[in-house]
Image (cartoon, rainbow, N blue to C red):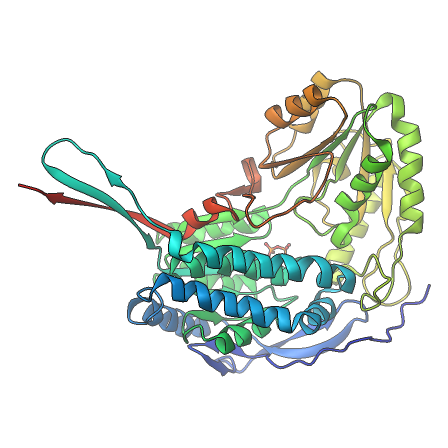
Length: 490
Ligand code: ADP
């Protein structure tokens, strides 16, 4: 199939500059970088390349807005109202935003329009509702004192996000920060800066005061590191690779910043012989290939009980063969390109390693088409726990299918990884489901489903998959400090 692009909705590019203190400005250095359409490998736009000098200006604007501006002090209900307004504006522009996301990231329009955007809007609304419900406690203490706690905004939040869910990551980060009364310096990923900039424009239109949200596009080791090291930033919320988190932890140690991390995974997806096999096959397919396999919680280690292994692999193979690849702006397309050449090369390298180490490549394994970073849905069988494709995060459409014999063995093998972001189990036996849910070391466990997200349900990792939780009431902890006030009643 050729990958010629006949765009159904070419979105307009309005914003390509830094957004600082409510103003759009070129980078101080005047430098720009290209953002590429991964489906065609063509340049979409030149974007301002911010670095330390731009971060200085953004932090100054965010500090001023935090310390002097109305944001933190305004009636919390009004903060919530402005957040609702931003969600309303996103809903009004939902088609345009979805198309822009698809253009910059390559994800199919059916996903950006029906998953990313609704989830992002819902997340902002969820936290808008929390703005006036963040409060402390009164605490009975010994002696003649009155003690209470206040939950105060943490200050200026530095937020660094990845390219796999650009709009959704903005919502996950802005939602709790804005509700808590923090101000923000955000760096979108260099591969996908366009929708974050567009949302900053909508935030201004919604009436969120200047300086509350600042966006500095640019690269990680320059703009990102400058945010992490800046003494005017109180906390860092980061989503990305665990190796980057290790650098951030070191860089943030000088100023002892609060850190929340949402990192990678190698999530086990366990299918028992007694499961509804059609549902399990559909779930395993979706759990890995959704978003071109570029999900931190992708079910990339699929464990199938020995007695149904061959039958299950056949079902999966049929689903893989049917998957529609092509122009991501076509509503029929199920799988678009990988985000860039680097990711494409990395995934192809893992496919080579899988073959070299003796796994059987049952589907795919090759580039799709002749332009754009498309990779066929790839499935390896006969995978063993020690192979690179069973150990390392591939972040692409490559499924490893492993065999298991019984419940005791599977818990130990599921946990045999440095990661602990998510896991799933497919079975009709509630005993087995609970055994796995209780014993697998992961932040989220799905039973007879996969990738079910809700703004109200906390998400984050055990082990090297993260620190802290996003979403839900717990997500606010990352943006508030508790202050204890004790008053003498004598
Ligand atoms: P990915 O492999 O998903 O691109 P990264 O961890 O490299 O994951 O990138 C996630 C985000 O972290 C991006 O916005 C990137 O620019 C940023 N980043 C990369 N390196 C650093 C760094 N040293 N300091 C701060 N941010 C960084």
